[in-house]
Length: 263
Image (cartoon, rainbow, N blue to C red):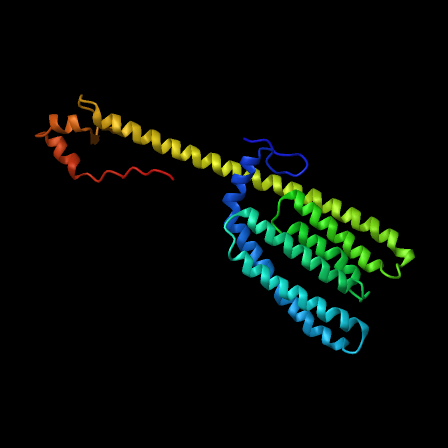
């Protein structure tokens, strides 16, 4: 079994990690598609809700920001439908994360009632939902947190809470990084076990084919019987040797279970 990184939980060998990503590529694309659809729909609903702030300063910030997030979510959804490998899908995700973080940063700068919630929620989504490599997950999530904190603190930072908020964001991101690293490790251990099981089954099937070929090719008559002496099968030499045997005629009428191979 290939070694896993203690820090990221990913395979240390780049080729083995690339093979893991290739195997998981269809699942990753479907996950990205669902995430982008949810992003477009939810932000469209928030956009409709923001019209209640019409005439207030928050309205003139929220509407362009929501429109930008919806637009880039749809663009990334279109791009995601055309990717053919994991690196391309990852580039689409990083682009979506950057545009979303900027749009949400504009929303946070208005100091709305849910600004603090958003400061914690969006990096958590980047950590737990977006299927990128660990280093990019860490960079995008920490970068998003710093951007949202800067937007929240501009232009008049709340001096009594900004230090505590900074520490809370740091602790939150550290905990999420540990959780993602553990999840990465478990997924790769599960994948490695499945790969080893499949290889063992294929090897067993090949061995069975070799034994079957040898059994049929041996020129000496060979037969397989039960403990009670009931004939189960014969090789070609035995079939030719016992061509007039009454026991052979009975064996030909027996229903012999088909040999199955696992793939």
